Length: 78
Image 1 (cartoon, rainbow, N blue to C red):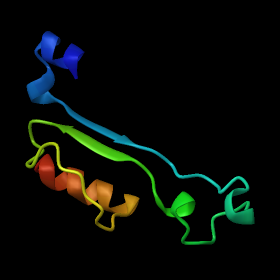
Image 2 (tube, helix red, strand yellow):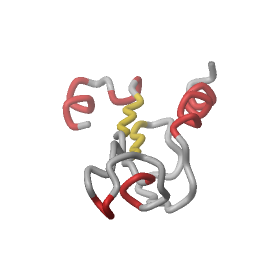
Image 3 (cartoon, rainbow, N blue to C red):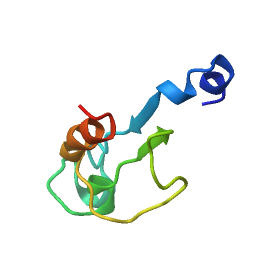
C-alpha cells in the first residue's frame, strides 16, 4: 500500500488478499475438509483501496469466496 501511494497509483488500485483454508492437516483428528471446525471454515480476506467504503472494519459475518467476483464487479462498476 505504501508503494502504491508513493507511486501515485493508490487511487487507481484495489488490492484483494484472500487465503485458502486448506486441509485440517491432523487438527481434531481430521485430514480433509468435511467439517465445520474453525480450521476448515476460516480464511483471511482483506480488501484495500479507495473504493472500499468502511475502512478498518473487522467482521465475523458469513462470507464465501463465491461472493468476491460480484462484489468486485459492483465496486468497479462493471
